[in-house]
Amino acid sequence: MARTIDYGNLMHAAMRGLIRKILSDVQRDGLPGEHHFFITFDTLHPDVEIADWLSDRYPGEMTVVVQHWYDGLDVGEDGFAITLNFGETPEPLYIPFEAIRTFVDPSVEFGLRFESQEGETPDAAMIEIDEGGESEDDPAPDTPREAEIVSLDKFRK
Image: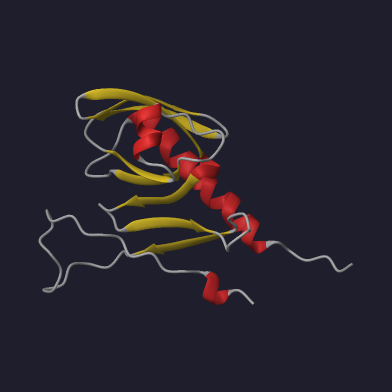
């Protein structure tokens, strides 16, 4: 049997490690400047821990925002715990890194997306980092912009 390098899973692990590093830095130092995160995760992942009313309301996928108010951010090897406010109700969450589908920081137009083919485990990460300046067509600096995420799948053979 021929040996091959599993680039998809290597990329997957590297991107999860990047998220772990970012969140660990935020745990230690807080969110810098205008940075904030939209994190979409699989609510059906067996290791996700969320309130029953949240899993009933979001039976498959949920996006949380880490920005103005969060508490108890605790980053571990396999995931992170955080308390977020849902309509004036603080709720603790535990999100394994494997459950994350997208991680976006719109303040700098950075995004990661973990995708899988039907019946497969996620093995491809998609990323775009736009470091370009503003143009006349760009919204004002205070206007949030959605990050564009580009697929790396087109480079796979």
